[in-house]
Image 1 (tube, each protein chain N blue to C red):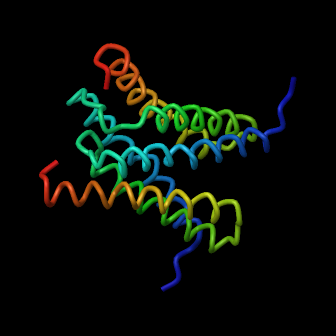
Image 2: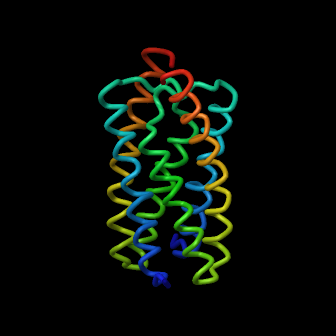
Length: 90
Length: 90
Protein backbone atom coordinates (compact mmCIF):
# COMPACT_ATOMS: atom_id res chain seq x y z
CA UNK A 1 0.00 0.00 0.00
CA UNK A 2 1.34 3.39 -0.96
CA UNK A 3 0.20 6.36 1.11
CA UNK A 4 0.27 9.78 -0.56
CA UNK A 5 2.89 12.08 1.00
CA UNK A 6 0.17 14.70 1.62
CA UNK A 7 -1.72 12.24 3.86
CA UNK A 8 1.44 11.58 5.90
CA UNK A 9 1.97 15.35 6.12
CA UNK A 10 -1.58 15.94 7.37
CA UNK A 11 -1.27 13.14 9.95
CA UNK A 12 2.08 14.62 11.09
CA UNK A 13 0.65 18.15 11.39
CA UNK A 14 -2.46 16.95 13.23
CA UNK A 15 -0.47 14.86 15.72
CA UNK A 16 2.22 17.44 16.53
CA UNK A 17 -0.40 20.22 16.87
CA UNK A 18 -2.95 18.22 18.89
CA UNK A 19 -0.26 16.73 21.17
CA UNK A 20 -0.04 19.99 23.15
CA UNK A 21 -3.70 19.68 24.17
CA UNK A 22 -3.24 16.82 26.73
CA UNK A 23 -0.18 18.65 28.12
CA UNK A 24 -2.13 21.92 28.49
CA UNK A 25 -5.06 20.07 30.14
CA UNK A 26 -2.68 18.29 32.57
CA UNK A 27 -0.87 21.53 33.44
CA UNK A 28 -4.08 23.55 33.93
CA UNK A 29 -5.60 20.75 36.05
CA UNK A 30 -2.63 19.89 38.27
CA UNK A 31 -0.88 23.29 38.14
CA UNK A 32 2.33 21.31 38.56
CA UNK A 33 5.14 22.34 36.21
CA UNK A 34 8.17 21.06 38.07
CA UNK A 35 9.38 18.64 35.40
CA UNK A 36 8.59 21.07 32.56
CA UNK A 37 11.59 22.97 31.16
CA UNK A 38 11.26 26.77 31.19
CA UNK A 39 13.88 26.89 28.42
CA UNK A 40 11.86 24.54 26.25
CA UNK A 41 8.56 26.36 26.60
CA UNK A 42 10.16 29.79 26.13
CA UNK A 43 11.95 28.75 22.94
CA UNK A 44 9.02 26.69 21.67
CA UNK A 45 6.42 29.45 22.19
CA UNK A 46 8.58 32.06 20.42
CA UNK A 47 9.34 29.49 17.69
CA UNK A 48 5.66 28.75 17.10
CA UNK A 49 4.97 32.50 16.98
CA UNK A 50 7.65 32.75 14.26
CA UNK A 51 5.93 29.89 12.35
CA UNK A 52 2.67 31.83 12.63
CA UNK A 53 4.30 35.01 11.28
CA UNK A 54 5.91 32.92 8.51
CA UNK A 55 2.50 31.45 7.64
CA UNK A 56 0.98 34.94 7.46
CA UNK A 57 3.90 36.13 5.29
CA UNK A 58 3.52 33.35 2.74
CA UNK A 59 -0.30 33.25 3.24
CA UNK A 60 -0.39 29.50 3.97
CA UNK A 61 -3.64 28.69 5.77
CA UNK A 62 -2.48 25.30 7.08
CA UNK A 63 0.63 26.80 8.72
CA UNK A 64 -1.41 29.71 10.16
CA UNK A 65 -4.15 27.42 11.52
CA UNK A 66 -1.88 24.76 13.08
CA UNK A 67 0.47 27.28 14.67
CA UNK A 68 -2.28 29.56 16.00
CA UNK A 69 -3.67 26.58 17.96
CA UNK A 70 -0.23 25.43 19.11
CA UNK A 71 0.67 28.99 20.15
CA UNK A 72 -2.36 29.29 22.45
CA UNK A 73 -1.62 25.89 24.04
CA UNK A 74 2.14 26.44 24.43
CA UNK A 75 1.66 29.99 25.77
CA UNK A 76 -0.82 28.69 28.39
CA UNK A 77 1.66 26.04 29.57
CA UNK A 78 4.47 28.65 29.60
CA UNK A 79 2.32 31.05 31.69
CA UNK A 80 1.82 28.40 34.40
CA UNK A 81 5.55 27.60 34.37
CA UNK A 82 6.54 31.28 34.71
CA UNK A 83 3.96 31.77 37.50
CA UNK A 84 5.35 28.76 39.39
CA UNK A 85 8.98 29.84 38.87
CA UNK A 86 8.21 33.32 40.27
CA UNK A 87 5.81 32.45 43.09
CA UNK A 88 6.50 28.81 43.93
CA UNK A 89 10.16 28.35 42.92
CA UNK A 90 9.55 25.36 40.67
CA UNK B 1 13.02 46.85 8.22
CA UNK B 2 11.57 43.98 6.20
CA UNK B 3 12.74 40.49 7.10
CA UNK B 4 12.60 37.87 4.34
CA UNK B 5 10.00 35.15 5.06
CA UNK B 6 12.71 32.49 4.66
CA UNK B 7 14.66 34.02 7.57
CA UNK B 8 11.56 33.92 9.81
CA UNK B 9 11.02 30.31 8.70
CA UNK B 10 14.61 29.34 9.58
CA UNK B 11 14.35 31.06 13.00
CA UNK B 12 11.03 29.26 13.61
CA UNK B 13 12.44 25.85 12.64
CA UNK B 14 15.60 26.34 14.72
CA UNK B 15 13.66 27.43 17.83
CA UNK B 16 10.98 24.72 17.75
CA UNK B 17 13.60 22.02 17.03
CA UNK B 18 16.19 23.20 19.58
CA UNK B 19 13.56 23.79 22.28
CA UNK B 20 13.36 20.05 23.04
CA UNK B 21 17.06 20.00 24.00
CA UNK B 22 16.65 21.79 27.40
CA UNK B 23 13.61 19.57 28.14
CA UNK B 24 15.55 16.40 27.30
CA UNK B 25 18.52 17.55 29.42
CA UNK B 26 16.22 18.38 32.38
CA UNK B 27 14.41 15.03 32.10
CA UNK B 28 17.61 12.97 31.79
CA UNK B 29 19.20 14.87 34.72
CA UNK B 30 16.27 14.87 37.17
CA UNK B 31 14.52 11.73 35.89
CA UNK B 32 11.32 13.45 37.05
CA UNK B 33 8.46 13.30 34.54
CA UNK B 34 5.46 13.82 36.80
CA UNK B 35 4.22 17.03 35.16
CA UNK B 36 4.93 15.73 31.64
CA UNK B 37 1.90 14.42 29.74
CA UNK B 38 2.22 10.85 28.42
CA UNK B 39 -0.46 11.70 25.84
CA UNK B 40 1.52 14.66 24.59
CA UNK B 41 4.84 12.84 24.20
CA UNK B 42 3.21 9.77 22.62
CA UNK B 43 1.36 11.84 20.02
CA UNK B 44 4.26 14.24 19.48
CA UNK B 45 6.86 11.48 18.96
CA UNK B 46 4.66 9.63 16.44
CA UNK B 47 3.85 13.00 14.78
CA UNK B 48 7.52 13.91 14.40
CA UNK B 49 8.20 10.43 12.98
CA UNK B 50 5.45 11.13 10.40
CA UNK B 51 7.13 14.48 9.59
CA UNK B 52 10.40 12.59 9.09
CA UNK B 53 8.73 10.05 6.75
CA UNK B 54 7.05 12.97 4.91
CA UNK B 55 10.46 14.68 4.54
CA UNK B 56 11.97 11.47 3.14
CA UNK B 57 9.00 11.08 0.74
CA UNK B 58 9.35 14.60 -0.68
CA UNK B 59 13.17 14.55 -0.26
CA UNK B 60 13.27 17.80 1.73
CA UNK B 61 16.57 17.94 3.62
CA UNK B 62 15.45 20.66 6.07
CA UNK B 63 12.36 18.67 7.15
CA UNK B 64 14.42 15.45 7.43
CA UNK B 65 17.21 17.14 9.44
CA UNK B 66 14.98 19.08 11.88
CA UNK B 67 12.64 16.15 12.55
CA UNK B 68 15.43 13.56 12.93
CA UNK B 69 16.86 15.69 15.78
CA UNK B 70 13.45 16.35 17.35
CA UNK B 71 12.57 12.65 17.09
CA UNK B 72 15.65 11.59 19.07
CA UNK B 73 14.95 14.22 21.77
CA UNK B 74 11.19 13.56 22.02
CA UNK B 75 11.70 9.77 22.02
CA UNK B 76 14.23 10.09 24.88
CA UNK B 77 11.77 12.14 26.96
CA UNK B 78 8.96 9.67 26.14
CA UNK B 79 11.15 6.72 27.21
CA UNK B 80 11.72 8.27 30.65
CA UNK B 81 7.99 9.00 30.99
CA UNK B 82 7.01 5.43 30.05
CA UNK B 83 9.64 4.02 32.45
CA UNK B 84 8.28 6.17 35.30
CA UNK B 85 4.65 5.33 34.50
CA UNK B 86 5.43 1.58 34.59
CA UNK B 87 7.90 1.44 37.48
CA UNK B 88 7.21 4.54 39.57
CA UNK B 89 3.57 5.29 38.85
CA UNK B 90 4.05 8.90 37.76
